[in-house]
Image (cartoon, rainbow, N blue to C red; front, top):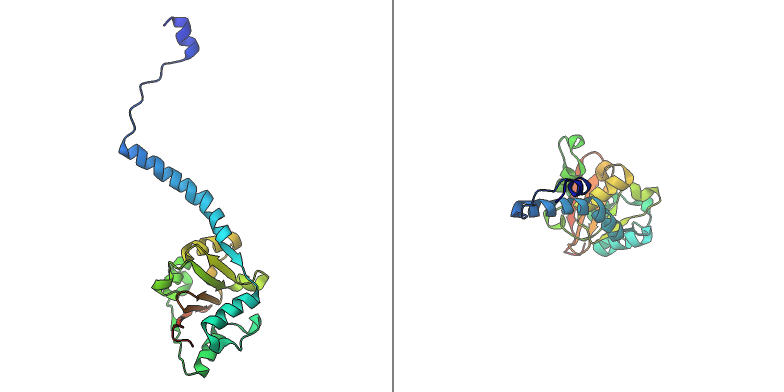
Length: 192
């Protein structure tokens, strides 16, 4: 090759090494990172919708018929559910989380939500944001961990910042959190 052509073409790149398993694995991990950062939030938005309060309360009543007297969102709380259950002789013990203020949502979820529900893909969340005109949240495809990420990114506050009620209809469980670090889970499989 003449000197003039070498100058126009630029330096000849070194011969590329064939890809190794490590470079292939790194490439996949890089693409997964992009997927998690950009595509998963879009997917979560499509799988997390808002319900009306009537729909949310209907989900509660189907799961725990003894709560059918709670017909107004302003009367709904973990304490109200506890009282309804107590009236028919069912005790739902609440447990205090020590140093709850220092825990993040993921840590609190491991206390509040029974293990069998952590990977559930269908659940209803009634949180502080629900009362700000949003209504209860319905998740139909993402686990609670993804919902927590969505909630934090969308509303810039922790999910377990105030009272939270999470209904798991398929698992027949109601998980409850009181803003002062108390939590309980009700097993509704016996038809309460």
